[in-house]
Image (cartoon, rainbow, N blue to C red; front, top):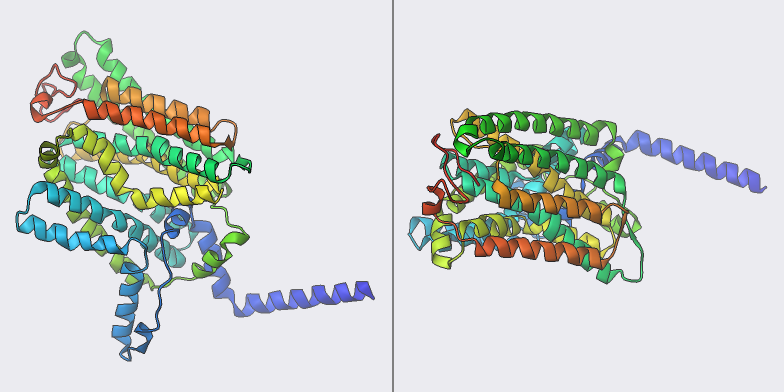
Length: 461
């Protein structure tokens, strides 16, 4: 009798599964696409989202208006950072009414915070319709869109020092500040539990970060290997461009590794505790074309605010008494990625370190081997000489940060003291950028730390 009952249950279950496969194929496909393209960045950003109440919108009888207000509610009000959207129109008004460059700079930075989270949300919505591979490529491309857009605007204005400091600061903040805060808070909150994570993802990212570090160190050493920086300037620039091509090849290989051959290393962990979140994110909340149009609009607003940030950074530096290196390397990365960073810390509290590592290491890796070399290539195309020589002080900070992070993650376990050490390292680097006072006059002096080479447009940072 028990065997017959078990057989009957198995048959019933099989029949139900077949019926579900037959009648619910679209739902299963959406879940598969979601599982394949939902990365740690998406999981991190989703922790700051809130479920929208459509009771009021559903009463609108006109279909077009109902869809418009539904999209408006999901995109603008579907995040816990929605109140920060108010800074965007205020920044635009401040710019046109000449309220003062520091006000424009500060408001633009605040406005970029929710925009970065919304871009992640919209790329995830598109992934429901494009499949895991294209969705993964969208996430990889738009994951650091804010840094890339700011860097391109700074390049067009020949502010190469801002480009280098902002991108360097993004790598440092991800490796030390975000990861350090996550490990420290997660260790305090889970002091009675053993915190473990999968080392395979951390090892891959560490190797790629070391590859990027090598491409920074060699141009720096090449400069000092010659009799004078003026004699090695052309060779340093050529070596930097060749190194950027190598890094971009490595990034393409990384995408193939992440999206095709070893996707299981980078899939965000989900368990029973997240069933409610999984259920809410099971299907798209807006259509494909709606998500596409909103993504274009959000990107345009990011570009506008980025232009404000780049154009007012020197005035903010003079008014606040802070160096451009500190604002570009410390304040800009912290505020610009606050939403993503907060999500990483939240998952560390939940003892989900694989998601936290995916956010921190993934962002640092993407900036190091994709955004930085892409900026060098773009500057090459538009006729600006930007190299990978970040100078001795900045390259040393980058090297020590990568090495300390790699040693911290080598055993696959975590506790609060590891996070504390990373935070203390970031505090030391931030203090170094704070006390170093650069100025436009210093940038024109070949003997200073930030000097111009004889060839126009090349800035040593």
